[in-house]
Amino acid sequence: MRDYKVDKARFSDDFRRSVYEIVAQIPPGKVVTYGEIATLLGMPGRSRLVGKALKEVPPQFSLPCHRVVNAAGRLVPGWAEQKELLLAEGVRLKTNGCVDLKRFMWKVFC
Image (cartoon, rainbow, N blue to C red; front, side):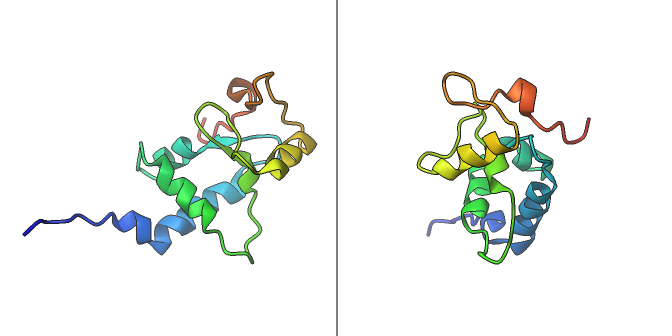
């Protein structure tokens, strides 16, 4: 019989809550990567779990999810509002459409 390991973080309300608490703190005009959030939660390399948690944000929550980008500064494909919201906050995109992380990355614990 095969032993399957279940990733408890995937189903943990505590994990989601922790992700949401970090996202709620990202100031206007700054961004954070999925990977940085995973690292802050002690789960380096688990950026996809962060993305999954953000896809499942309850509608009654008001979180600035638009401030979370991938490791290259790329925006979520198909979410045009993300670009509009970031531009309105003063975040500028490079010619390739990515956020300049050197300039706009939120240095969480520096």
